[in-house]
Image 1 (tube, rainbow, N blue to C red):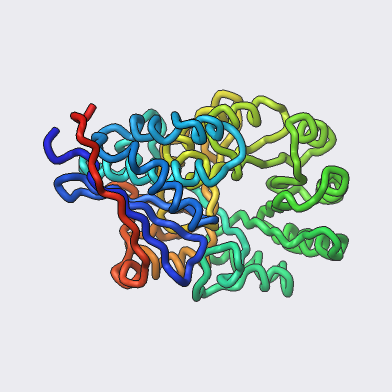
Image 2: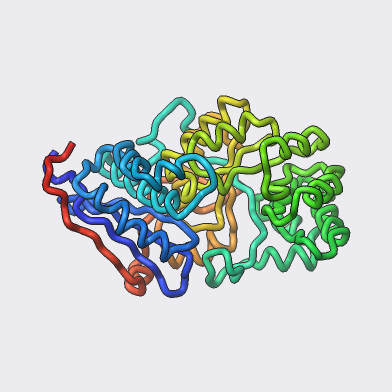
Amino acid sequence: MTGERIVEVQTLRHPSHRHLLHVVLRAEDGATGLGETFWAAGAVESYVHEILAPHILGLSTGSPARIREECSKNIYGSRRAAGPASVETAAASALDIAAWDLAARRGGLPLAGFIGGEHIRGDVATYNTCCDPDHDWVVRGDGPHRDFTAFIEDPRGLAEELLADGFTLMKVFHLEPGRNLEGGIELVREAASVPGMSVAVDLYDQFDRDEGMRVATALDDLDLAWIEDPFTPATDRDLADLARTLSTPLCSGESLAGGAAFRRLARGGGVGLLHCDVSWSGGVSGALEAAAAAADSGLPVTFHDCTGPIAWATGIHVARCAPSVAHVESVRTLVRGAYQAIAQGVPSVAGGRVPARGPGHGCALTETHQAACHMRSTSSVKQQPPV
């Protein structure tokens, strides 16, 4: 249809957010879609323009599936289609989010409505991951809460504060190799003792197999919501071996990409909960595959935060459509701080739940953020007729 071909691929990088990359797809008639990914932003940006953009330009904006196919069929993309997230899959994820956003906006629909399905919810439950706003691996900026520090200083007080803020589940990640593990486990015990508050512990792949198993076993009597990424490398067999010894569910998957990788994890018998990051797993398309893999194996799925406002909002829309979603992750200090400076339309959390509105994923970069960004563009349109 006239006006619907993609004629430009843009990337934007902000000097204060060195890990964050935004991707814009622009159509002939000026319509746009916005995507996002996080980490290794310079490498991802180069891959977008040098490898993927020539395959994307000239395609129809109405077919996210075709755009995903073009991102994955080249030699690098096909090799990375199912396994650990990578520069290739991060780039493809950002483009996929932008493609779905553009298609939904063209239809005048919120992304969840455009995705459709039998399970569209008005909102989804969310939990708070206890970060400080200046952690190096999050979108840094001012934020109203220092929940990592508060947990170390007064875990019970933080749990009570989060309950008053509407959260009934909190996730902590303070346990590290070589630190005082017994003292760290005692902090978890204090937070978990607060009536009405559930606690999850993320070991974020820092431990080797034997130490990770030991720490997970030591946590098992605390009635936790889950233990996440207990060790690396984590084979399906090792996770299954650990799961058989625990009463606490294991959670993993945030660093995976491609439906096949999520299906292997779901079927391996090691996890009770799949964790998916929309900006690494293959975008909306990859997240829908992860949700389907969870449902096929009778598992719930949760969607990762700690990356950026566009990915977070997109994950909420996918969660609204997922057959067996548990909840979405949120970091309240980012949602109420740095995310607000980056984007308008960021969903708000109230009573431990979060809605997502449209059109598309509902977010747009603020003028202030855009003005400070370095923009790179590829806009030479392929001359063959659109498919």
